Image 1 (cartoon, rainbow, N blue to C red):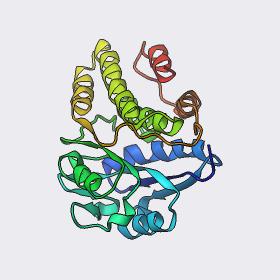
Image 2: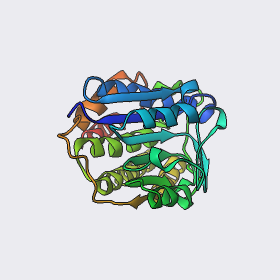
Image 3: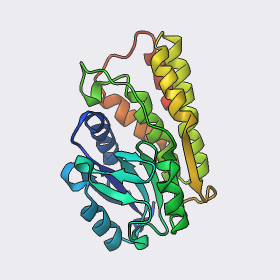
Image 4: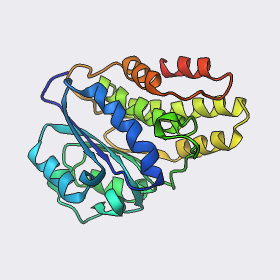
Length: 249
């Protein structure tokens, strides 16, 4: 991948949801080192001023993965600080970029607003984003949050590989449905139902045909193997082989 490409990750870390998601995604970003200009705003750096400054100073950034909380018109970072609010942000920080939100409800208002002001595309949820955790494990050992995180990373990585943003979004959603079938087959119907709910409300806004013009950044199999091998958990009995196969599809 051309060194001209920049990738931004905004990863707050301050409460249960972000404690579960941010460490796994941060681990994922290590696979991108030396393959692009990488900007990881983690914990206290996941704030409005840091995000705006990074986007203003680094025009090479196109893909932006934004983890956090939100509602119809707001996306928040560390300690619920508002980073983007509909009609209340400088348009130059979002123009010509693709935003992949992992938060509640931003698809109802914020994503369409950003596209109308010059963002190429946005992925966002039109309902609350639910997921399951195992409170008896840490983030890198949690077999219940895993299918949610990995579906998002699978889709986002496909975009970095050179797929269109619409293709990448569809891969994310399809991954959620596949994981739902797998977990349901092992008796975890609540997890399956939640995955399907999130997938049903995962929407794309903007130019779905847009793709990065540089060569592929990283192969999904390399990413998932690195994450998979780093996770010390023992998955639900009987699903380990099936999960591994799904990761590499």
